[in-house]
Image 1: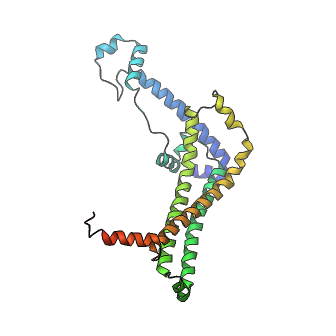
Image 2 (image 1 turned 180 degrees about the vertical axis):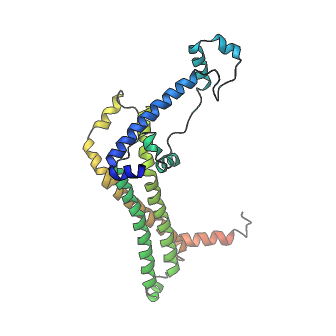
Image 3 (image 1 turned 90 degrees about the horizontal axis):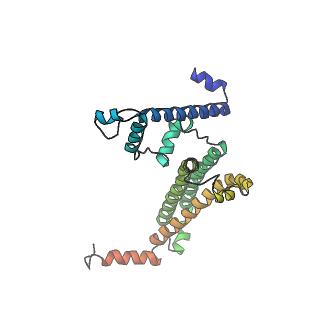
Length: 255
């Protein structure tokens, strides 16, 4: 029946139904918490004698139990927490967070940047293989030096792009939870007006996410690749310094 429901209903209807299920889940959890507060002994509370509870009325027991469980906390927010909630679908039916399609599309384009960086590294490696050895000898450059710099830069750029893509949606979820719980002040705060200023600029976030990740990945690519090339290039100062340190270290018993 659930599979048939997914086929016959579109995505918007399912998301709205999940939001209503989340509201029912939260109300039920509130009722369960209120019920637990009026129990004589609750899990996690301080054990007290039955005579003490018998002398207290319902309000007194609830206040006493609330004080016992005041420091009890539950995990909410975080990178792995958000991905775990999304994979088991509880982020929709328990937390009631609606992940917009634009955010998912932007995240898909960020993943696309990861593939672009990977294929760029392969293209550079292919170009190095096709280079003439005679032309490189004029500059005292070897193909292995270029390969090492391209591999190091490609790995660093790929890691930067993947990390941004991996954190994007959990960061949005955590921001929503911060607005809900008051960590980020909203309606009653004076500074809330700045959130309502120039709301049309939100449409620029889609392009900013794509080109921002692309620029970041390629800048990291060339920076780390350039540093690796300076260490691998025999004529460079960094290469000479590193060789001198390695050569002199055993003589002075450096550890």
